[in-house]
Image (cartoon, rainbow, N blue to C red; front, side, top):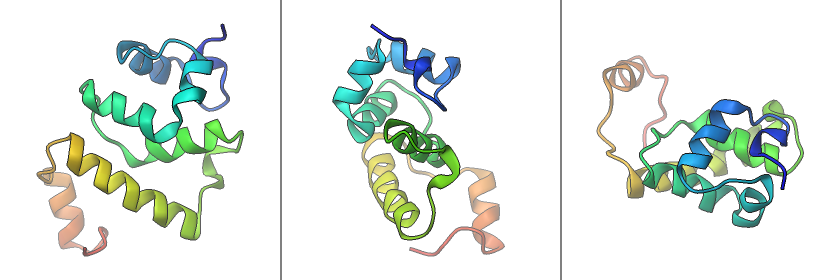
Length: 108
């Protein structure tokens, strides 16, 4: 069985996180799919990060990580925000508060 890091754009750090969440192989990750696998990471204590989330989606589709744009990226952001709210403490960090104040975080 191939290691998770054999999937293009998923390196050793992601592999370590997935292994800690009980996802040991590339095939297990593919079988779970991006959303279910990312939920497992959050349930295991991984801090949510939108770029990591959409990179995972792109990787499992065999696409370059920076191929996610426009409406597709906006939809993934909505899904990510719901997942984050369901599985992680959603209080804003100081950085997020500052980014919100200067208009870098879209108003909900």
